[in-house]
Length: 113
Length: 112
Image (cartoon, rainbow over all chains, first blue to last red; front, top):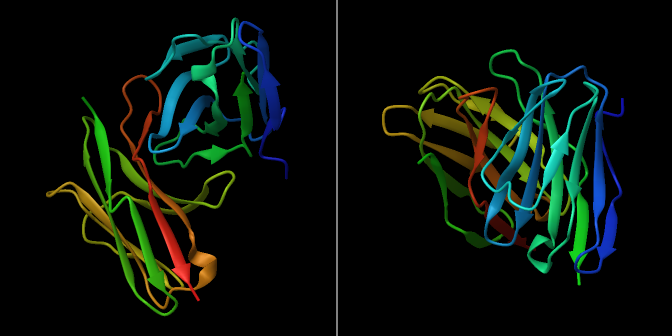
C-alpha cells in the first residue's frame, strides 16, 4: 500500500540549477497537486492537475512547471532555482468523487543556496 | 479571495489539559472542511466535516462544523505528549477540479 510516493526526499541546489521532483500515486486518483510549505505560511498550492494531460496554476505557480503525461505521475520542475524556492514540497492526490480527502506524500526538503 | 484562518497560531499546554483549536473560512463553493495532523512530515488525515452541527469523534479528538458562522473547532481532551504537532485545517472549495485551501496551522506543544 504505497499511496503517494515522492522522490527525492532531500535535495540541495545551487542558484540557477534545475531539477525535477517526481510524484507517483497508485490509487488511480484523477486529481494531483503540488504544495509548498514554508514557516508561518501553511500549505500553498503551486500547480494541480484534474486528469492526465491537464495542468492548472495554483496560488504560487511562478518559477515552476508541471507535467502529467501519465495518470499516476505528476512532475514538478524548477528550471532555474532561486533561494526563495527553498521549502518543503508536498505532493498530494485525491479522487474526483465528492467529499474525498487529500492523500499526501512524505515531502521533499529542498534547499537552494 | 478564498481564505482559511486558524487560531491560535501556537499553543503550549500541560499533559491532561483540554485544548480547542479554531478554523474560520471564507470560500465560495464550500464542499467540506478537513483537519490534518502534521508531525514533521506528511499531514495525516483526522476528520472531514460536511454538515453543520454533527460532531465527528475519534478517541480524545472531536470536531464540529458551523456552516452558518463559517467555522470549525477541533477539541483534544486529556492531552498527551504525542498530541504535539501542527494541526492543519483545509477547506475544499472546488472551482475547476478539487481545490483545497489550507490555513497556516496551529502548533500545539504538550509538556509532560
